[in-house]
Picture 1 (cartoon, one colour):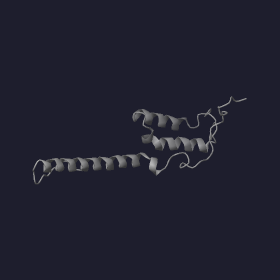
Picture 2 (cartoon, rainbow, N blue to C red; picture 1 turned 45 degrees about the horizontal axis):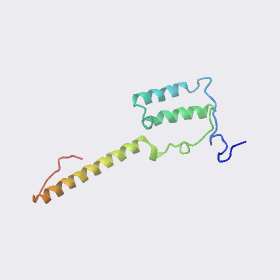
Picture 3 (cartoon, rainbow, N blue to C red; picture 1 turned 90 degrees about the horizontal axis):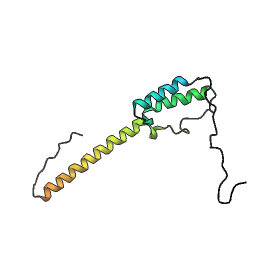
Picture 4 (spheres, rainbow, N blue to C red; picture 1 turned 180 degrees about the vertical axis):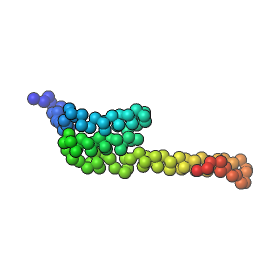
Amino acid sequence: MPRQGRTPVTAPDKGAFPLDHFHECQSFSKLYNDCLMKHQLMPKRCQKFQMDYLECRMKNNLMEQESFDKLGFNETTSWNTEEEMKRDLFTKLVEIHKMADRNIYRMQGYDHVDNNIYNV
C-alpha cells in the first residue's frame, strides 16, 4: 500500500526491452561505442550509429517497431543542424562585435572606420 503523498511506482512508457542475448546487434553497438569514444562522449555526432543499432534491435524483435521521429531523431536534433546553428550564431556575434567597434570609434571622433578584419 503506497504511503500518503507518494505516487505508486509505474513502469516506464516504453517498458523494459529484452537484452541481446545472442549478440545479434553487438557489431552495431560496438560501432556506436567506438564513435562515442572518438568524439568524447558527444552522442549527436554518432546519431547514425545510434539509429543503425536501434534499427537492428527492431529487425531482430528486441524492441517494438517505432518511427525514428518518435524516438527523438529528427532534423532539428541532428548534428548537422546543430553545427549550422553554431556557424550562424558565430557570424551574428562577429557582426555585433564589428558594430560595437564602429560605435566606439565614432564616439572617439573618427569619421570612417573599416573594421572588416573578420572574413565571415
